[in-house]
Every structure is written in structure tokens, then in C-alpha cells.
Amino acid sequence: MADTTSTLDEFNEVSDPSLRARIEDFLVDYVHTVDDARIPEWPDYFTEDAFYQITTRENHDAGLPIGIMQCTGQGMMKDRVKALYEANIFEPHVYCHLLGRPRIHEETPGLYRARTNFQVTRTMQNGDRELFATGKYLDVIACDGTTPKLQDRRVVLDSRRVDILIVYPL
Image (cartoon, rainbow, N blue to C red; front, side, top):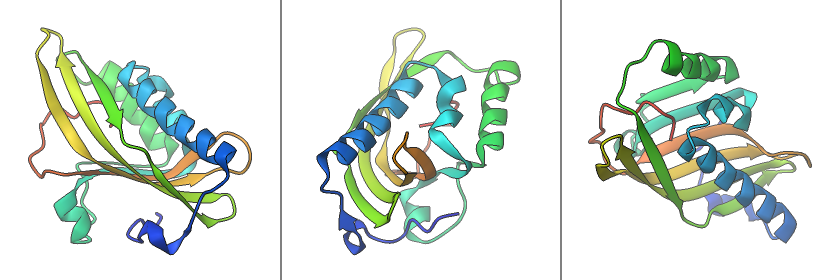
């Protein structure tokens, strides 16, 4: 599990425009995959041993390890996806993510930290829409010259009031 408590200012900001574009495109592709309900593809955005967590700002700032949703490794992520289609019962809905421009910094060669603010609107099957979640992604991204992969993604929600219907990953 990577330490995501460091500030991005401790690392060198990525200045290579092609690398920055590749990472930004990767982050946008991730949310499009979720927004387009291509959830079986979701684990492919992570390294084999990746960590994924949805938590609140309050818990994150206090250093509390409790998450609303947490997966360690692609295997656990694939199990979660399988449960969505075979075990869980929920009202159909879709997400629409809006992303801020990410701040991307190099931690070590081939390993990058990024912070991206987000808003997610949820539309239910009956057409009702609501602002579902706001917050920030705190990412550790492995990018060794090929396709970037998330090594660690912390989804830090601004509010501790969380709808019980977090079915899909954010």
C-alpha cells in the first residue's frame, strides 16, 4: 500500500508534454470506462497488486485506514465486478464524471503521483439526476513507457454523508 499522504509539492512536476498527455488521457479513459458502464474493464486500469479505496476527507485527513469501499489487488477488483453482475441487486443508474486538470509529479523514474478533483453526477433509470459525489483522486501511477497503470488510487470524498448506493467504482 503506497503512502498517499505526501503533498505533490515534494516531487518534481511532470514537464514532458507527451508524458503528461499520456497520463491525462489514461485518467480520462478510466472515468469514461466507468461512465459507459464498461465495469468489467475497470480492473485493467490497475497493476496486479494495486490498492483502491473510497474514503471520506475526514477519515483521510485523520489518517484512519477505514474505507467505504476497498480492494487490494486486481483479483479482489475482479471479484467485486463479478458480484455486481451475479449477486448484487440495485437500481440501474449511470455516472457522469467531470474532472479538473490533474497535477502530476514524478516521484521516482516511472512512478508518478497525481491529484485530480472530480464531480460525479448520477442519473437513475427513471431520469432523476443528482450530484452524487465530489472530491479528489490521489493516485500513484506506474508508467514505464507503455500503458500507465494505477498502483494506488484513493478516492477521497468531500463529504462524510455517503449514499448507500455506491455500487460502481468512482
